[in-house]
Length: 394
Image (cartoon, rainbow, N blue to C red; front, top):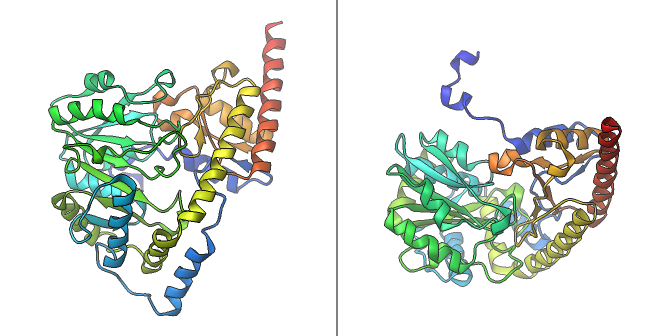
């Protein structure tokens, strides 16, 4: 039946994250540092709000844009978080996770042949999202020597007359890199000069361990050029609820809403009710989880460095992105052998673009005992393969 599948879909590779996740579900005793998902369950008072909404009979559709009550809370939250005022009526759209928001923005904005600048290593959805929207993804490399910050001079080299969107996602998945205000100011001039729009994925913004998160939308002249996206999955441990949102100019949010109307219609009302509770009363629990991630970040970083893997110190999110070049293996080989031999699941760096080759992504949103055990297994794996390489040389 493959002849019925569109060439566009056929051209997209399967998610490099899901490939390993599917293998993990088929094996016993695996420690997963693969999927980017908190090991915390959603705080009880948020779950209770979802349960209570069911008890009260909230089982219907909501407005396509989402409950006005939630959009008002989102607008108030973003005013506190990044200092921008969005109109709940016209400039906020509730989506099924940030992934849907990215998809809607690409489809609302791109014409065939338009180019989307994607700093790499990057989350796996951006480039395929551009392709599915008839655009062309253009990878723009970032480097560990620059702390994975996007350099203006490098960005400028990849801009063409077809460039339309720049994707910014900081703290970054998979590197943990962040962008500072001075970095964003330097990019702003290039963005305005070249008439670009920005998709700013800020889903990890609350998990920033160095300084204050700054949204590029908050810089002078950038609010209307930026579609700012955020959600509840990471900071509030609400991955399965699938609630995200996009904020931006009313014309763009209106165009995204049209597509949303014909496809998803609306996010689940139970999830929206839980999200309201998260924004109103969830900050204390969220801060506790972020402090815990920060502890785990230091634990896994020191552990990886002790066993001989070079690793940039992540400034945000909950990922480490160590180099495995010393092992002599490709990223794919390393991950597959580590999984089969030691039952530790990590994700090959090339799943996040060719710039990630020679690295692996380790998610430290796992329990501390699991992180410690995984480090022991990786150490054993590296020592064994080092001995094999030496014996082959002799």
